Length: 157
Ligand code: FES
Image 1 (tube, rainbow, N blue to C red):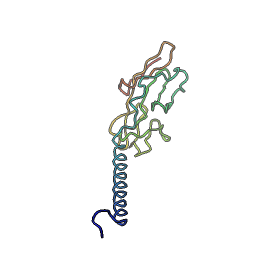
Image 2: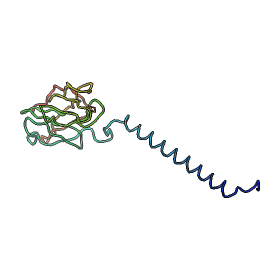
Image 3: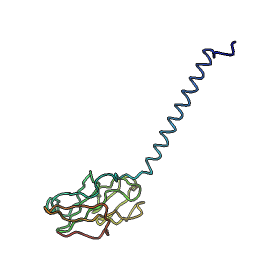
Image 4: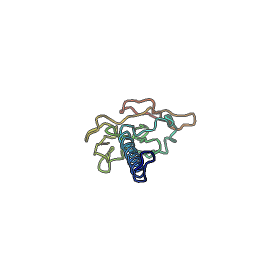
């Protein structure tokens, strides 16, 4: 056996080793990325945080209208309006209107929120966020996600 050039068995096993190390590091990297995903909020902060949502009269009375792009519910009661976050305060799942009673329901772990956003069942630790509403020059509702208000506050048109 020569001491200079590696024989083909040595080359093969070195390739096998390098390939194994690469596969291991790749899978570890994917695991770390997967774990990191859970600590990143389910909200895109880069998006415009202040936006027009439409004319007040276009929202059905006594209903919560979901705006998926902004992850917001516009809740109308007569001439008063609220903009509620659609992000559950437990782990950030998207809530939906409760099929069984007035208010909201989180399909992930069963948290329930009253129509004003107050949490009352399940693991959610606090009420839904509520955002400031104003009206544009053309009369459209404008939601500002940068300004949190009390969930019980309503904007009257
Ligand atoms: S994320 Fe909504 S109850 Fe857990």
